[in-house]
Length: 255
Image (tube, rainbow, N blue to C red; front, side, top):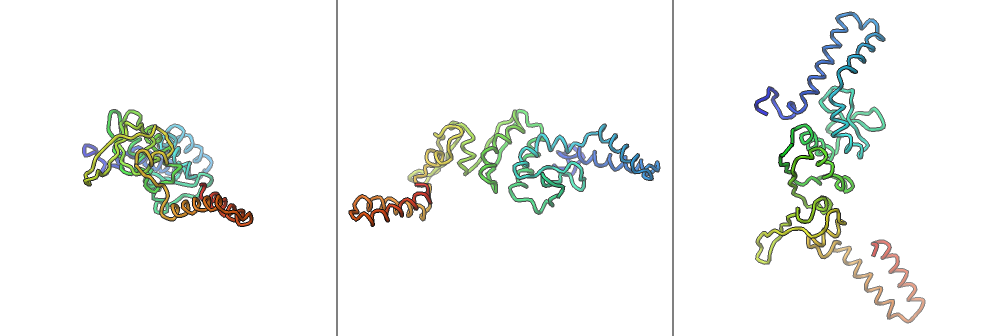
């Protein structure tokens, strides 16, 4: 990056947008100096013709990089507004969203996806720490496929605590860190197959015996106790009451 005239990585990555915005401003100035602004229809026509001949680089960034994931948030890149390099708006309207009002997960996606897409990643290694941060599970399901589509010729190394992200990799690609009996950190490969149910990944790879917290375990023990009481109960009315209680608890927790 230091070999380029841009002061920051982002200026370097998005310099095509900056150049385009400057060209638009220059073209508008030229039209004003020619007096075309006195004829709004002609000015609009010439601007449209110029833009058709000079595609907005935001369109390429939007269609090939950001919109495929932003659409899942009902968002998209604003191709017209040039108050910033990248402006996000609601997909079904013209309302732009200030950067400070974007969610942490959305900002994280933009900040990671743009460099992956814009840099030449052929034959490179891309390291990502906790890609699941602040992202809803349905986004996590497709996240690694999305990143790999932006850099198909790169190799990804990912540190994660999400079973959803872990399931995006083959078991031999997973390196599970764990403590042995002496408290030393050890490593082993995963077991659950690619794309397995995250709960299976938690059990097989993360060695979690219980997938419920204390309250959930207490509810399950209560469910088992009710089952035992139903077998032993001889009074039919009381038995039906216990059965109803067990069914309600089972439906609540999907036991």
